[in-house]
Image (cartoon, rainbow, N blue to C red; front, side, top):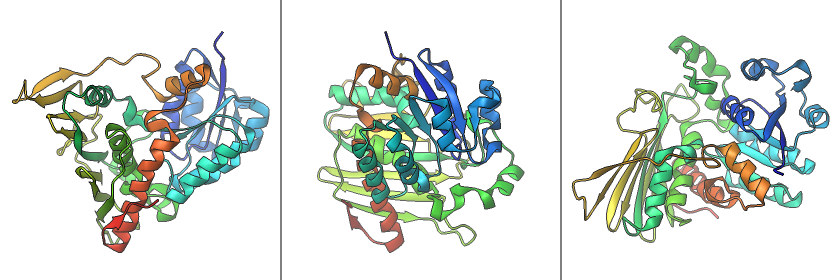
Length: 359
């Protein structure tokens, strides 16, 4: 029989916690047995949506684990606290699913990996774009060899800004956004805020996935610099590989959110191979392939995803139930390469010069 998992959600600082817990509740082999945040008000929406009784709501993470007795933890703190939370939780020996990005720095990412190694804990990093059908279809076609060797990845990622939406992509008003900015960790440098740390990990990690684990040689990044903000809202990163150059751009402040109406430029990926190209945009129902048979381009329907590849909870639980190694972007090994690119990009922007990939 398949193992049933008692799942607890720890830290609601990232709004994706509500979405992840909804996926837990929908999974036939999972049950939400506890939610925890020191700020009880942050849990109200999830508590109501999941109809959780008082005894499953906690303000202290240790009490949550001791009393709820979970088998698996979903963790959604601010980026700057990822290493802190993994080091706190790893001694309990429970599998950890941490929401993207991996960490605020390469040093923090290595702290996370080491803590989990010491306590024999399975660690996964969730990148929501991994579950977009168009991108999984693009990966399948790249791996099939249809466009030859992949030599360029072009990524444009972002949205109107992290405060324009909450769990379930519920939209807020401009006034609500402005009121929230001063107290939001997304706009605080010490907490890992900024569009570069929020979105470059998507492009760098999925780009590494498309490129079968290839690492760049050097990285050059520029960011916008607003006098009224301590973090960036726009970054452009150029990565030089042994076989070519790729570009990763992040933007808070797109004209529309890509899950409602694609902005211009469109959010997503353009992949260039030696024998063709693929455009794969976020949430679109088709991808476009250009090759020798279709030099003008061909629209191809995105694959219909099935369990366990529809969302991170399905995938993580399937790996745990069947003893599979974590692979792809959720694996700490591949996510660490993405973090190398992000860290190098961050320092490149600060120093205003090209830097070799940090090790």
